[in-house]
Amino acid sequence: MQTERLRIAIQKKGRLAKECQELLKRCGVKISFSGERLVVHAENMPIDLLLVRDDDIPGLIMDGVVDLGVIGENELEEVRLERIAMAKPAEYDLLRRLDFGGCRLSVAIDKDNTYNGPEDLNGKRIATSYPNILKDYLDKKGVSFSTCMLNGSVEVAPRAGLADAICDLVSTGATLEANGLKEAEIIFRSKAVLIQRKGEFAQDKVELIQRLLTRIQGVIQAKE
Ligand code: PRP
Ligand code: ZN
Ligand code: MG
Image 1: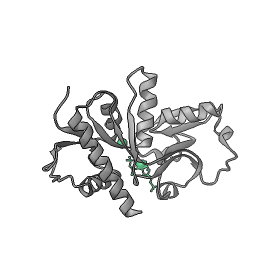
Image 2: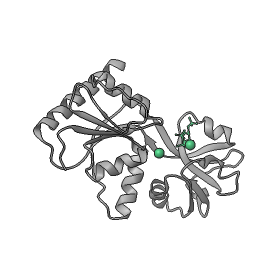
Image 3: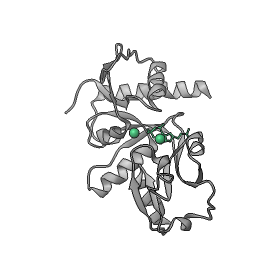
């Protein structure tokens, strides 16, 4: 289904939301975000923004439902691996790495435990929202483990007796610290990226995307 307006999916709320809206504004896209609206039309360009949960953005791109998306590489890679396992379309084009949303996906353990390497995780139960990235990483290290899938509050799992370790996003490290955990192994480094669906684009959309990319380049360079 081709629409004339360029559809861009961005996170409705969360760590990427503000910086993402800011970037679009600096690129000259006139948008007024108001209340609970999920679709916002740009006033001065043929662009519609879809405000969705970040978890849904990779799938919207891989199913070709929206044209562009801004998403953290961690979420993107997790969904990609999950869709490959389910034999669903999992392709996208990376247009640009952005300069925000930096974090790492790490395994963390009780701060009083020692850690000598991935082999220490053998036979352990690890709580995470990223089971596919974790499995991909530990499989390559020859470590077998079990997961406890949690979509939030992952850090409480060891103390609650749900798991031996966790694998979650770390940015400042404050959440780990507050829960008596320490970072043991970095498994994935992530930033926000701009991605594009596969398939044909009308010429005017190609030109609009090119114009946006040039402006993003300018905005990022101006900050450096
Ligand atoms: C993320 C992540 C950690 C925390 C890490 O959660 O799941 O809990 O941030 O950040 P820090 O190292 O700076 O403390 P987020 O706040 O995004 O919420 P969520 O877990 O509910 O998705
Ligand atoms: Zn999420
Ligand atoms: Mg969290």
